[in-house]
Length: 143
Image (cartoon, rainbow, N blue to C red; front, top):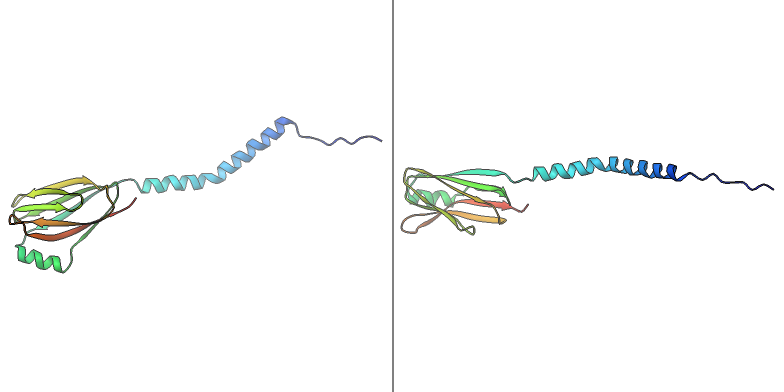
């Protein structure tokens, strides 16, 4: 009887099959990998500018604050710039971040800082007699 020899692929054919399989798998994964990099780009830090107008007396500002204040939204890592104009002297203060800027009556001032902490933070106007009025909320979402 004659022994039947089974055909074995040569090593070069096996290597070619493995390489082909690897390329097919990488090609199938490409859309997933590309989507992940697009998502990262979409989450890149941004710069936000928010305006605050303090152009009324303290009684009017207090009444306005009681009816609701604007919410400024950003994400951790973003750069925040507050632009304030005021007909009143005092200062603008972002609590927790402990950032403030003196307000010059009749002028525009800017306060720029990185949004490093997530949460909701009050922005207040402090008059020279230390009266504090709620002007806005800075809401920073985690990244």
